Image 1: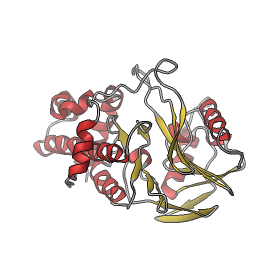
Image 2: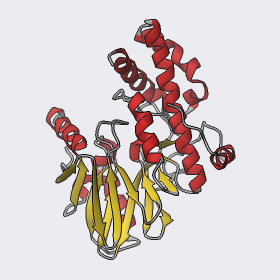
Image 3: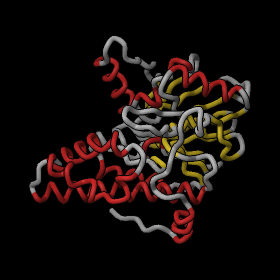
Length: 307
């Protein structure tokens, strides 16, 4: 699949820093913050530290404030980070947090579920099943986040304080249970981990081919703002965020095409991993490439070898 980029998006991309964006170091040049998007809608930028990586990559959540309560989309990696986000929300409203949407099932966005005591937790069915399986196989000291209370299959709509909140599962992507949260009256779409802004693609579950279609469907929504699950939001214009999403799509396409070429030649996974740095070019310079390379390439190789 290929998608052409509009001239405004190309121009916006040219205005961005180089691909090797520095995400920052905690308490040095990274600050947790609630970033205003449009009226009563915020992105919360929290930190994510991974082994072997010096940089802190932003973990983003969506916060929707209404006069009948707050809706949060995705939490943070730990209970402490979840509490910090709740404290930031309390800086703009005293309304209770009524809903927490787990837009995908991995720990860096669901490990803080317990902090949102009293909120109804919503997720796509596949996401809840993945969370339940992770709880069963977790070690004694591993986080066991509260499981979602309500699930949906393809779509669901919440109406809170006059705000229409659409939940869409467009297909396999980062995981088998990704949810895109769309606010049609606000022109905002939260793409969660279907889109990392300025961070290497995470495709460890092997859905590179499907990810292209799923992210493409999300980008076809009539949204001025497309918010990533990781990476920059603060200081970025709508055009820059959309250009970042189009660039991420190119990143996924490059991974898919490079790995598929090896599979079609009958190359081993080891040969594929040895060649991939050169074949991915500038994408191999992105933050977290070192951490994600093995799982991303291995997962994609296995999936394309056994279609």
